[in-house]
Length: 68
Image (cartoon, rainbow, N blue to C red):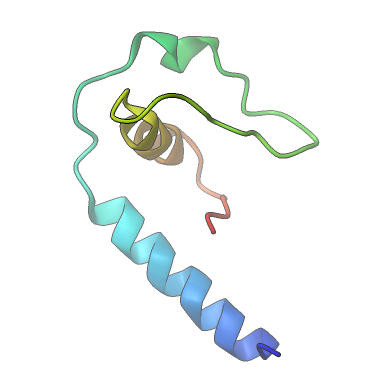
C-alpha cells in the first residue's frame, strides 16, 4: 500500500517534470477542449498521433492538474 506522503511526493515530482517539457506543435483541437469539467478527461488515439503533445499543451493552460 502506498502512503499518502509517498504519493504526494510522486505527484509533485511529475508536476515539475511535465512543466519543463517542450510543448511541440500547437494542436488544432486544443481550443475545442473544455477544461472546466467535473469528471476525468480521457484522451485516446492511435499511436504517435499527438496525444502526449496535446496533454502537455493542456497542462500549460491549467495550473492545477493530476497526471498518473
